[in-house]
Length: 271
Ligand SMILES: [Zn+2]
Image (cartoon, rainbow, N blue to C red; front, side, top):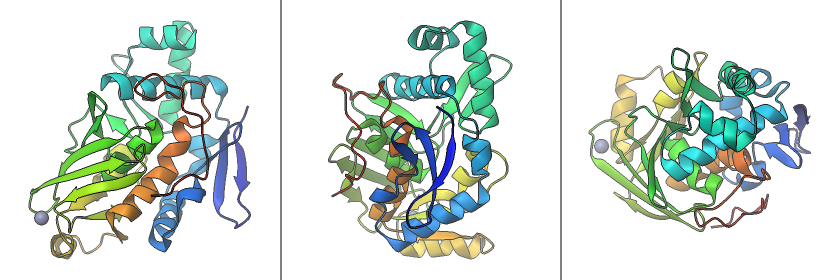
């Protein structure tokens, strides 16, 4: 299975990453702002770099990394990947280097160790996601909002206002596909558009929560050159779901925290 550039019937960019699974999942995107933000993100990303020639081996290693993060709150060691993917060390390392080149995985070259895989990172980002009994750092606000739907699990997210540092708490339900509760209720998401070769250190740093519209505007006043989109929590979640649900959907490794296999069900995004 190789990457196939594709487009939906609406002419939206779409990439086949696994049999029957397209990236992004446009079916969950209902709001115009989520759609515009996704289009803007895909404009600054080199999507051919991400997905061109994407192989089954790379997909197997990447899904194993994501599932390990979901279950353990940390990335797997190379030995874990060798055993979960049935590969030797050279095969795992080749896939890891390719995934790093695609900016799908963050790798510490000196140690040969994975330190991040979107939406997760070992770095303290201030976006903490609880998935079942596990806690993990998300790369940014949209990654935090999309992680539960990717894994098929409700989540609790702890973050803070980018301007004033006030705590922000978000709870999701419906297998991570809908917002259950937000505190404070006026919380908004800002999706900035900025890319410098690695999303973790560029795009992800300008996608954040704000405790209110006023504080978003206050922050934007100091960062007026920032291009981006103001979103409600629901709109931020749509954006995250569109990006992250395909990451594990249709993979035979897609499992829920209780061990049940969750079948991919493209098109289900109701709240
Ligand atoms: Zn604030």
